[in-house]
Length: 341
Image (spheres, helix red, strand yellow):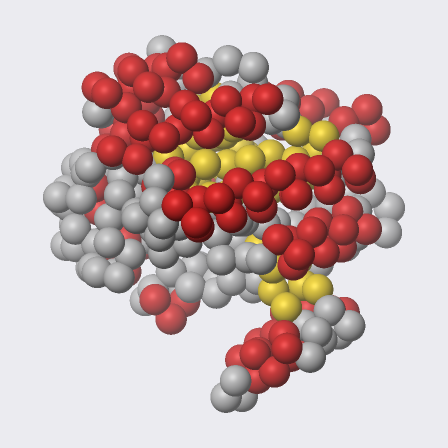
């Protein structure tokens, strides 16, 4: 199977955010079921007990005036208790979007294989049917049709944007610059940068990934070269020459995240996109938050990151903010701005 490899956008497809928009950040929460990250994916993994921790997390973010983008998947959208817990949180800019985990999302017409865990690999009609089933379930659960989408495992494919547009979606957040999932049967985003752009009427807001270190100008090309040498990337990281830093509290030390934020702002990224998984809000469900001590570190990470964003004048945005501001944007890339590679 040939990997889906999106290419850098043309300059005219970059979103030129209005001046009044400033520099903003958005917090995506992959709001999903729990499963053992070390075992194969299974259709029966539909427990959503960790959603009980979401209201407390929402209060902590709301105290800092940070809305959340809750990217809900099928087990969550069809669980009565989860629906009851999430419904009252949809205020102050917090909204529900869509996250498609094909292995737990009907119709189940495909074999359960690693390649088929990337929805974009499915036959067009099946990907469309799964998208429609989840979109309808979310609308029924929360009373509003979602307009923002994320493919589970970042699994976009060649048909995904056309299908999203046909269902009324306005924004996608599935692309992860600097990451290549081709060896697993997934897409390759190594050619992309962090700037938002348009694809067929959909705004693509990549999940922010920054190269830091003294050799960061080498970017993805140097990172790929280092990957072909045993322990090459580790050597570069320890020497503080090159590190790939996604903006997430999961597995990324806070000092590295703060440095990445400064680099992203310095490079003119107008929307910084953060993400984490909802099961990380309760100990024992992800490799990143195994116990109460990890959970305290998780929240200390956010305290420092939010303080740094405030110091830099980077303000929070919700999904509606992003879509409405993108609609007002001039469809011409800023002068001299080229997508990072």
